[in-house]
Image (cartoon, rainbow, N blue to C red; front, side, top):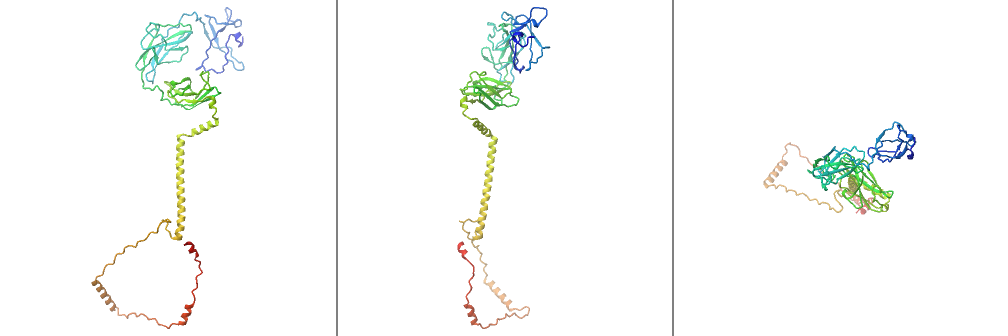
Length: 465
């Protein structure tokens, strides 16, 4: 009837195309509504936008419009609410009775988990948590209990709440019994402070390291200036199921423990984070900053970190992107696996070079000794300066001495054989040559002829010698 003009419909227009209602629901305050004259029937055409009046029931609905203006205007879900004048409100929310205090699992005995059911009152503004090392039922001064809450939560708190310190700044330790309660306070400041329901429990040391050093740290942390006034932080996480998210820390001094830096944010699934002045008001591009990212699980956050230095923007710009990329590429090659592979390759090349050189020297040596042996008779196992071995004649044993008696017997036997003729044959008589006279003239002629000289050139022997 009135369109989307706030002056006519008394509505509130929001230009947001995406709503993460599970993690980021929209919550806003409405100060105007449509009121019609008091009649028996509600006629929107007769209504006009007015400031919200107390104690008059209102009905609220939401319409969704696409980029072309299409919208559903019928069968819309609605909520009913009755505004209350909290300025004159003196009625506090009802006391809470459903609450639980339990030991934090897998810890070192320094924490308790406190949870409770939220109040049904529509004007609840906050929840105050009280805890002490002694029993109590009242938080009024002089009532025997703590008068200062250890925590104040908003109307939509994240539960369970971790209690690590009780009244008097006393830390929770193993075996210490702690009493705790919660008080619901409305926006007018009304709350019940006595006759409270209180629960108690003791912490247990499970032998857990609260430093979080068992959590796998992040890798490849990088941080650089973005648009000259923001720092873009990125890293490589480990997806092993134990890590629930990452917390980002910053400081103007180098640090190795998260307690020495400022926590500026956290992410659950992302591996990058943009630091701006809206998140960290002290950020400026003329200061050297140190940034670190620490993973956390269901119980604790890793305390030890390695901070990365982020130089001022004008100093960081001196290094060109090409140089930065070259350094990054070279650094990425200097891994343990690559170094071992390079070492093995060098050893193999050295062995191959040694084998090739040894074979080449042996081949040259064989050719050289073959030529020397063929020319000079040098043995292949001798060098140029080696002297030929001198052969030593073996010692010959002297023949055995023949005794005079044996000698006489040998002579006698030989003489008997010579004189005897057992086969009665004629003895062989050697023929005597016939001597002829020499022809002296012919001999003289032969002796006077000159012996012909050989026609062989022996000058090569002089060259060789």
